[in-house]
Image (cartoon, rainbow, N blue to C red; front, side, top):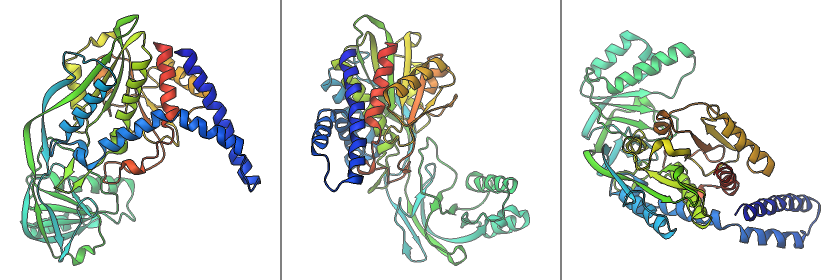
Length: 456
């Protein structure tokens, strides 16, 4: 296995040199070097299997049929069945007599109407507006009271505006921040947040005008009032009323599940290398708008399944465990469920790598916990340098921002790795499979396999 993979690395590097030569010749000649192009095309055909499988996985998981892999229309169930079937097709075994680890969550969803009209103009959900994920239902026509950031910073003006907004929507214009210093910006932002969530404030709801991208989150709770984020060309002083019909549904005991599988080690089957990634995303906003989540995190699942495919054909010495988590977007709930009810002994995990945002790489990768497990980070960096794989590998310390964290807090040695550069789509409707570049996916995959093979 090692020799075969080493030959692949050698041939891959050779073809990188050929590729650079071809580009150089193109700059000097009208006609390309056909023999070199022929060799390069053979290499692409012979070694494109992993990237094509990755593209297939992402295109499926990020398609409308999977409903944004959330909890409207059972998007999570559709996704978990797909991943389970891939595990079965690749010949992996379940961890505990089942590929599923079931658990319950509370989640706020928006399966119904998402209608917003301002000054007789109907706005497009997901494109021109979004509601914060913790918002309750709201329906009716309401007056609006505009307030600028400067007015938020003035307590007298703010109290006056709040009295005017009783039973109405407060319209916060968050677009102009000129003249603010660090201190008053923080203070204004803090006050603006309290206007959204303080139950003592007697306003119907909040609309925030912004120039920023419309990004969404997920929530396990419902706020006291609706909050609408609006990115549209309106003069806040000219907005007189809003007509709204937004329906939420809080599901307090929703059943979801992690998807788990194992490849038994040939020499030390009771010790584990663990590969994780979350498959859930933000789901649906109404009946028509969904959040594809191609990079976040269909790409991580694509890396996980590619590694499962590789090790199903190249049996490892240690057992390889693969876990696709649900409910990461709700606060790492799936990972915490596994750690609190482990299907393997956590102290038998030799190393764990969690993949999230694996679909770019123009600027290399960043390794969370790299400074904690410096020997493993140095090994990863050495492999990368010797094989001319990724542009760079950045070191990062502890950060409890993804599914590795519950394992790390229980003493499991682990990395969380994500790619850098490329597309900026994230938690929005534009994170699509067709625009995900997979720039460094093959080299990223090679790096991880060589790393695992050395620590196996």
